[in-house]
Length: 88
Image 1 (cartoon, helix red, strand yellow):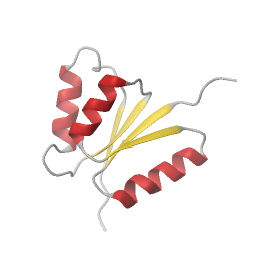
Image 2 (cartoon, rainbow, N blue to C red; image 1 turned 90 degrees about the vertical axis):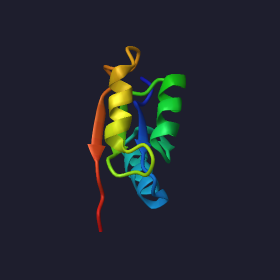
Image 3 (cartoon, rainbow, N blue to C red; image 1 turned 30 degrees about the vertical axis):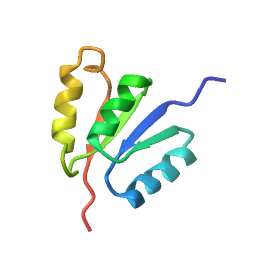
């Protein structure tokens, strides 16, 4: 049996991160969360992920800026990223 795929969920809102973690864990993924773009960059440089789910609207370093920094890093430029935004 193979190891589950690792997903990094990045969102500044606790409830959104927790909801995504519950849904993805239930689908068999290993989920790690980050509360900011800066935290996400640190995490992807330190560990391997199969996918990053990245919130667009975050303070300081938003999703677009985080994505630009990921793509500028040769070691991370091929990492799959899916961007999202939740508005109530």
